[in-house]
Image (cartoon, rainbow, N blue to C red; front, side, top):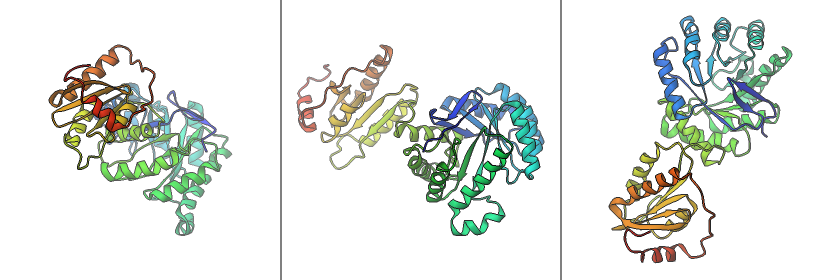
Length: 379
């Protein structure tokens, strides 16, 4: 079930019905201000909405004040084991702190951080990770790791509620996708607080993106989850791109174009893979949200292209450009992609007006056959 409560991280609302927020984490040593701010700028350009920076040392905490001032997006300090670093991060002006109450030094240290966060008016992120469960929950984890994750998180929740602090979000991350899904489902039924989703240590861009899409997608489609991080062994910009693709595929966020492309088969006589890759590369520079279909034959081409804002259906010598459900023009294959983007750019310049769609009444193959009669280069 969706979270009832919300928090504000540097002006970014998380939970309580707000759009799902995409975040990432810098890979640079935080004490290297130049490298860290450059990476934050790249993340912000990719659409990252909040960013987390690791603070393992005193020098990292000291660097935060300048990083916060230079960052175009809210900065969260990631703290483990050392409550004094959390206190210094709050003094530096971070928008939130991420702590694990189980490893920060005991209830007294947690209270110090909570008191400081309250005074600064900033939220926190708490929660459990399957790789760092408290020792007293090891036996429970042997029976059911998802239940152990939830219990660890609830112990932290009870501690913060006892301190009359409720300005926080929670995570229960695991590298095992089924465990992660069950843990978040169990937790969402027990707490009203915003949830941060993630498959921890997901892996390389290929396998990690798949695991993250399966794990987070299963929860997001049920309304569970308020902010996400795709944890990839890669440039963090890839985490942001993948995160938005997951949200876009579920209709939860709109950022940049969506491309539909057929998987190719023996009917392909245009090289649809090469065509799709060429279109995808050019779409990467567009911040506007619209759909483009790239198809290679008459079976699904017209139908899929008709559902998209724009589309192309290739042929051996000629191809067809579609716009808003109708055949726009028939052109030579060597200029098909250029003609597609000419029409897209013209549409954007004219205000991106979407005409009312007419339901396609003819079979796709018949529509393609009729389109083939259009003179080359005509509209």
